[in-house]
Amino acid sequence: MKRLLAIIPILFFFLISCEKELDFKYHYVEPQLVIEGVLSTEGIKVSLTTTTPMDEKIEEDYLTDAEVYLADLTEAQEYELHPDINGIFKNNCIPVIGNEYQLRVLRNGNEYTSTCRMRPATKILNLMFQWIKMPYDHVAVLQITFADLESYEDYYWIKILRNGAPYKWIMSDDRSAANGVITEAIMTTRMDLSEEDEKDILRDGDEVTVAINTISREMYDYLVAIENNSNGPAMFEGDFCLGYFMASDYVSSSIIFRPDEITNYEFFMESD
Image 1 (cartoon, rainbow, N blue to C red):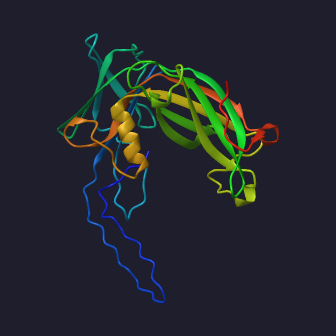
Image 2: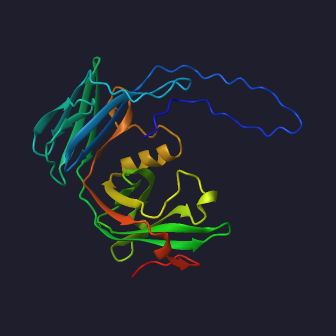
Image 3: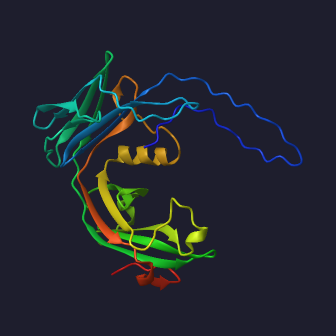
């Protein structure tokens, strides 16, 4: 997840027949606490880090000098989280779908809280690749079909892994649902790998895993902001911090990329 400071926008000028060395100066901003919490049926995991100045290397050093609690507001229960050997605060509590949960962090005399309702998992109905003819090449499009929860305003975070490592992600919502089904299409690799960026390449035999979380509107807005290189809306109350708290079950499914077995279409077709 990107962690950004308030950065003065930089305008890039196209200069013709002249060169000028530009010296950009960034205002120093005190490091801000970043809280990233995920509650699922596997328990709760919370990482604490700080933002990094623009001219310094980003270090993934997790903070452990804090007290972290998860409260089930519906059943009036509270769990204390403890850091593991990697510095991630954890508790193996099993959440209840539909209950309200509050994440509370105490550090250096400051308090940060965020509340979220535990959301159920959707169901992945189908994964398939199709070659789509583009002006520059054929592109393998991953079609993801999954069930809509059929409640009011459902939002989804779709994460794609390539051989277990992060590859791509998108957001979705139920505005495109038809008969209780949502279909999303994600462009992946070009057919001519010599012209493709390494970050997008899929090779024969690669395992592509799709994981879908049902998320709140607040989390959806947060991801939209992150996608646009912003810190996103505040998701914690109390003292100022960055980050998010998500309470959501998830579902995942995998498919093996076999380029020679993919059907070739001149246009995208939805599965039945």
